[in-house]
Image 1 (tube, helix red, strand yellow):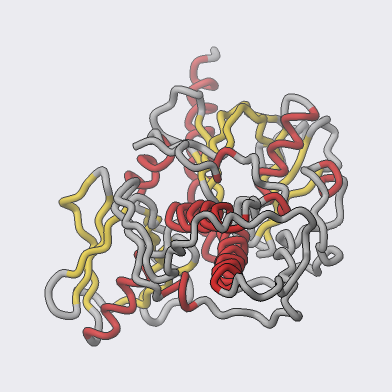
Image 2 (cartoon, helix red, strand yellow):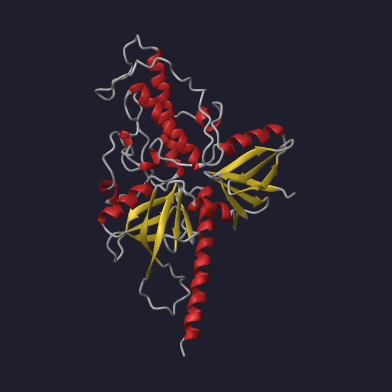
Length: 117
Length: 271
């Protein structure tokens, strides 16, 4: 167990030795699962290798929950789904596509039902 | 610097749809101390795939792993004054980070790439999501108070579908178990707790496009966006984005090593 400074920047989790300014590593947070493990501990695992867990022990249960919530929302894919959700809801309510004003309404990445699994 | 490469490569090659893809020629960046090399710039044709804020490039379209990755945060995308036609560059606020000069096959391809890359950052996506979140809240309130006259009359011809009076409460969101297990939260975190900037009386402005140096790209790319403020000043170098230049250097070094090895093999092959 090593103490690290951990920094969430957009969809990357950087980790540093506590006395250094440059990160020793990073985790891309896409297609990952954040799981609460035992007390104060959460883990990050990835779709293609689910048994490989990156475990983090926090100072408190509260801190642990904060990190879990933040990391679950950290992926670009999560934001994309949020955007599609809001767009759809606004469209249902107002009859208007809110993305038109940004000129991005036709982009494939924001279409409902284009994402396969 | 370590990276969860296997996961990154998996994300790059999995069948989640790419936001943009195509062949581009990438300028080879030479280090200054290789002074004995001739000065002609050379380009390598690579298959580029944009997913979210990540631009991957592969040696071939069928390659199973990317040879490089560019994280599109803290950068600007602009047309390039290179000798090549249809060239554009990705430049970073972090002065130490290398730039990427890319060449498209034609005008349309170049414009499509510049447009896609300019809007690829996480920050841009986050701005749009927050804006839509506000709009949804506003639409919910308007519908709830449907007996009152509209509080704003921004766009003309806006219809209201009052045939669906059952409003979805903002707290109740569907659980989506696709693409990596992420599920909706219960109203907290980024979605519910996003800080709301001040708004002027009832008329929401669209968020500005990410800061960009003034270039022809802003007129070439996409339809005009109403209500945009004039070109924003460059965002200050943020300490966070310095982390990404580390990622770029790391991958760039891998290529440099491969090239040297290849060149040495070529030399040995020649009598």
